[in-house]
Image 1 (tube, rainbow, N blue to C red):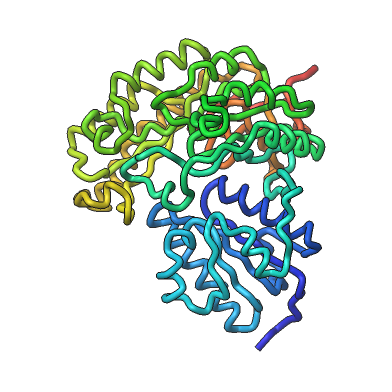
Image 2 (cartoon, rainbow, N blue to C red):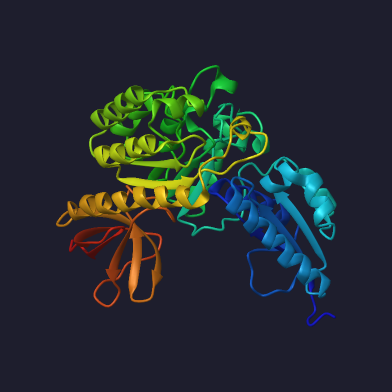
Length: 438
């Protein structure tokens, strides 16, 4: 029995997973808004007649979270709290037949490329003219900025090509137009995302063209920071580093998932590189862009990972001293190349190895942060939380990296603005400071 009146033209969009899903939800919401829908993101008002769940299907934990969320809203539908529940995104792309059978009370399932069909189901038109127009779910001063879709890499452990398809670059002219629209609406930081930024342009221009795109985006008035996420190490275009060094707007920051360092495991993962090539690449990056913050992610518990190979990885982390680092435990995913291998590392050991590496990284991060004490850094302020204004340096991305805290009683920072901050304290993953006097 319904406990409240639902708003017939209101849609609540729920987003799970990575920043690419956030971007997709924002595009969906932009289309709905253009069709005169009242659309909200993860609203807690519970008065929307339609709920759309944008799911993640990347690894087991993410899949389970998506399934739990679907069941939660199907249960709300049974209670009359929602009229329609639709599911879209990666999990739906990958497992639509199974989901339709196991959770039939969902009104319809859509894949990652089904936006026009989803809109048609809602009696909305897909408006092709809305290039880049979207409803931001992030604070307006930064935006995730997708430059391509899909991936051509053959990594043995990864199911993304199954869910997202082959690599497709978005033409440069559209991206520049999109950036101008965001800047006009107050966006100051573009966080470039793709399954692999370094492939940008190969399909459209016949060559890797990320450096040219960066130059064009740097010319957009109002954009002050451009940040690079998800660069594949094999075939990395060195000219990107030249642009980063010469152009103030490109943050001295690079997210490059390296996954492992054992030659045998890298070969099994089909990463197309070796320990020596990886070390040479890191040295070249740091030589070309002194002071760059390198973020990487690693996998523990890949099939057959021996204790010696894990110790090699752990020792390498100690040696490299990455500024930013995260660890995933291996997830045995259907239809990937590694699925034919035996998933022979117990979950408990996978987690133990991940925790050991993060324990090493905690000390490294604290060392890096202590070196910043006394320096004055440019900080972009994201929010006020409790007694602090909280921001980030050019070396930090939202959600995953370090933050700068300043005492709100002693300092004032305008949310969405930059300020010079003198760092006076350091923790493992936070800095403290004060607004520098001008």
